Length: 210
Figure 1 (cartoon, one colour):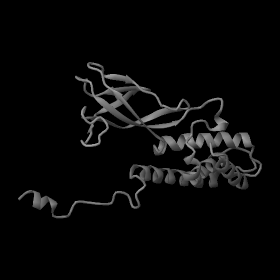
Figure 2 (cartoon, helix red, strand yellow):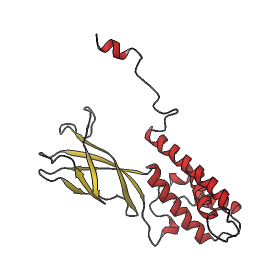
Figure 3 (cartoon, one colour):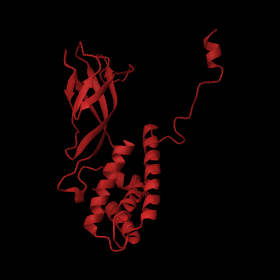
């Protein structure tokens, strides 16, 4: 955990939340990061595994013991002769989570295949939440501003506190939602400036029909 980045975040929050208790603040930081992860899918894990013949459902769990899987983002299979996808293009496979940690393939595997799954994960509530276990250190610098907005929104919604402010809480909540969406798009586009903003030439359809 990046202690300096966490202290910077707490200090910045305290300047806008007079009278806030550190314990309450740390709890809302954890809650904000958890919500942010579920909305943005920015915390990913990639796992490889082999299918088994006539086995359609597979038990999957986050590699970090302090996290849980929220979504399946991508499932691919590779040519057995090129299991790491160095030469050949992988094939996407249809699957979904029927129950938590139960990954179900659309079609029953008829052969052993090497799979690679990418999951979105979020921090799991534990008795060490104030220590932010398992949360990647890069979060605290990369997403400092969006976490700030989320915590301010949550804290200002508290009733009868020195920092209570319903209207300002709504304002920060809207900024949190907007910045979460931007973070999701940035992650999806590989943090490429402007996103993957290319397109086929306008006459592609005409040329391909000749």
